Length: 107
Image (cartoon, rainbow, N blue to C red; front, side, top):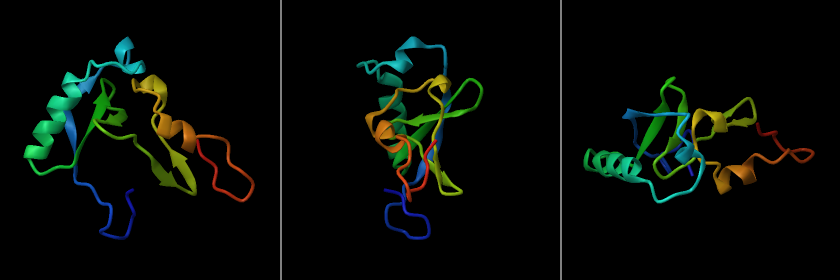
């Protein structure tokens, strides 16, 4: 897990030059249609990166080749909307449950 302010858990990431099409139905379902993700990740690793992040045709952040995107801001976890063109991940569904009393809310 990425820990701000420490070197533990840092990943070196890059943005893919390829854009996802948010209208592509395959992006909303888990399939074996991963050629773009696998190719871009292999290239990124050869360049010394740990992960490659994909944007859609509107330059909105979607997802990583092997990760979900979360940003903590003002004690809230932010993640791209599914409508951006990304797979609804099982990890995201755990973090995006309504907050319990005394815990930070997630959106």
